[in-house]
Length: 367
Image (tube, rainbow, N blue to C red):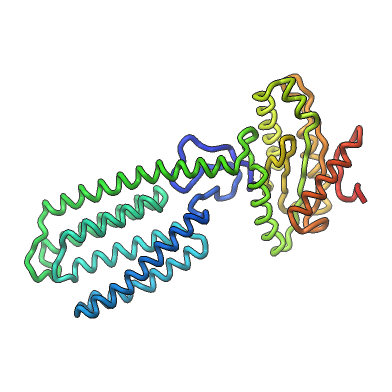
């Protein structure tokens, strides 16, 4: 499974999720730091609201409601655990389920019975779900919300609630609730699809090289740093391969920029093809340079792997002979950080450029 070959930004992007190719679970906007901060704030606010609601209802003498809110408060704290672990959607879904349950029970236990608070509370949950959840999770929460609200209205209409002021809920009020809740859900979801789709496009554009369709240099370095930390903790190996395209500026002048961009995309495709099903990270780190970090490549197979990659980027394209010089370094044998690995591989490129044949150099070649 590859980690860094991205097909490009899609025309339409579902909220918080961007389709990818060979990128593990995908570039998930829900996992970004701003979204994590939003989810954590939501968890804190809901948990505090449950806590203060417990105290307020206890002072008002509504012991059943106070006990119910007190039992729900730890669930809000559990959602904080999901958020800290990076499972933002699970945290939001848990919060929504807790709020739906709490609101439904409050409406049944409240002496005022089911009234306008149902419209505000349930509609608020739908808006939160529409803005912060994926499409499938939103549909699930919306269905649970409508089911719970219907149960609360039915219980009040049939006299099963604790209303002490008579049955104020009527079927027309239930119809009004459905209309208002539907409006909240549709508008909130449309805003989510439009707004967060745009955010996903912007995030993609900031990390993906437009010409080749792979990670740009900052994104490649960031992804490689995270991967190397995991590999080091698990005692695994990797190979960093760097290739420099010969006379790329001249190629631009000969075939034009558009054709040169197509050539870059072809180079990325060929590197992907050689890496195959192996886990890897691929990026364009310069105008004429690509880097590929191959995961779980043994030291004794590093040279063969690098030479296969190098052979793939020597080809004919639009009447132009594409030639290159390449270098590679091994993790952790040659270096432990992406900066040191990059330095070693690029030194290999410099050494390979001095050769007429066999224009690839590994760490051992430079000692």
